[in-house]
Image (cartoon, rainbow, N blue to C red):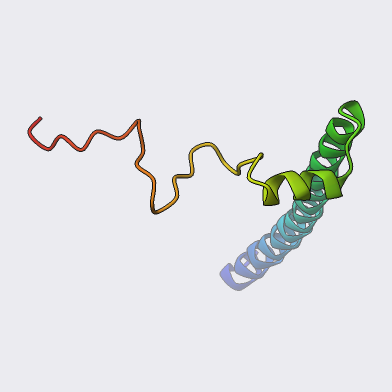
Length: 92
């Protein structure tokens, strides 16, 4: 086998591996997209279960938020509030 034939043979094998890798990547991308969809559906299911368990509707939740009875993320601190967990002491 000549050097040219050897190189062409190696190129053909490398092309085959590349196509195999690309097909595996496409399958993994599809799997990832499917998992992301399943996560979104599971989150909605958890919210639905919570509403059913407490005999609430989404309108009830929105009304409670509007009335200030429910807050968002517990780590969120609005601009006009101080964070009790934050220490302003700069002398440490």
